[in-house]
Amino acid sequence: MSLSSSFTNPILSRHVYSAACPPPPRFLFLSPRTTTTSRFHILYRAPQRAAALSATAATASIIRDTAASAAVFAGAYAMVFTFDNLTEKELIQQSLSRKLVHIFSGLLFAISWPIFSNAIEARYFASLVPLVNCLRLVTHGLSSANDQSLIKSVTREGDPKELLRGPLYYVVMLMLCTVLFWRESPVGLISLGMMCGGDGVADIMGRKFGSSKIPYNQVKSWVGSISMFVFGFFISIGMVWYYSALGYFQLDWGETVHRVALVSLVATVVESLPISNLLDDNISVPLASMLAAYFFFSH
Image (cartoon, rainbow, N blue to C red; front, side, top):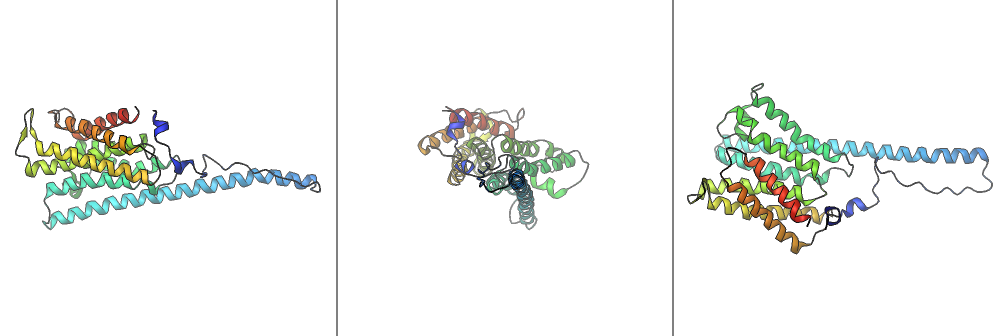
């Protein structure tokens, strides 16, 4: 079974036309009484009307996608601002705030994709949000600017150079899943579910209850790995169900649950390996999830 046959998109299959897919021309029935000049004007205006409608649809899509990007960007800033305030008021710890930003920023970004248009270019408008954050991380990581709020919200030690590692890899993966998979495949959604939800919850639970360490990696705990598998699985299933309910693709749920569980297992094993010094979890976990999901959902 191929990806193209597995992820049928009934929304896109409806009669929705854009600049890339203009409406079919209507047949013109001219009466015998119509003069040659009238016929010329009718036949000449028909493609003009079609072009005008196509241009109008394209403009509407651009306006909608621009507004959607701005809304998502504003929402992301509001979320970070909220967690920063909670930290300053000492309602939550800095480490917990950082992980909550890790969990919710990517998941809320993926959940927002349906507000964008059906135009081909919509995914690129959506990817502008992580792209802007990517540029911010590089700028502050190179010490070209000094945003203490950003540094505190996404780094462990408060070192600006940390922005060029885990946080930067995180937003790059958001862009990669957006451009490559968008709303056409569950692969990107599962990858983000494991990176944001699974890995994020694993760190929180592991720090709090992870006294029993994994034999081959004393940095990781059994509680953290079990939490990653369980939460990564349920968050990924929830993301896939959400897009399936909206009609972006149709899946056999018996097979889907089994396949997502296998992807969760692969991602959990990869996250538990003692390779963090060589390959950051924000790279290894989403890439392993992506490859496993692509394999399981295409066979």
